[in-house]
Image 1 (cartoon, helix red, strand yellow):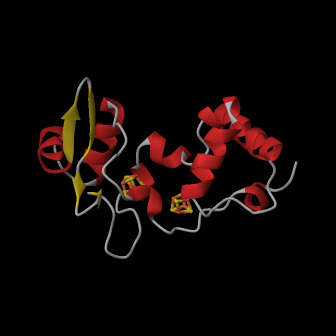
Image 2: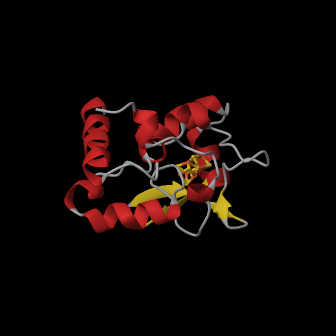
Image 3: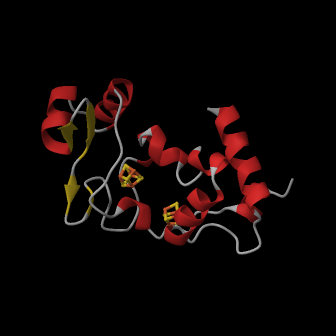
Length: 130
Ligand code: SF4
Ligand code: SF4
């Protein structure tokens, strides 16, 4: 298997932190983020999170995640939610090449030379690590 970076390497373009959709934050992740920001979980929820159905997710401000920094970097990088850490190597890629094509269209981190099989192997290796 190729080096991971020959298949995917984040270009830190920030595209995946923009838009009106965001990701869920589990209670365990909320606790870690609250500790990182030196806040209570209640204060974190009030300032940075919002309920959506049965889940809690991050607020969107000015078209991007509330934790997206002015320098283009994630302000909670060491404790960002699992869904952010894993992105764009999403399990849906395993079942459908079109899912990968759709993700690739929005993420410039995939190498132009990467094949679907290589990307699937990479997704599997990330799933085995998690
Ligand atoms: S869209 Fe892709 S390359 Fe850009 S920051 Fe997100 S993961 Fe990295
Ligand atoms: S937590 Fe960080 S990586 Fe995740 S969407 Fe927000 S700014 Fe982006």
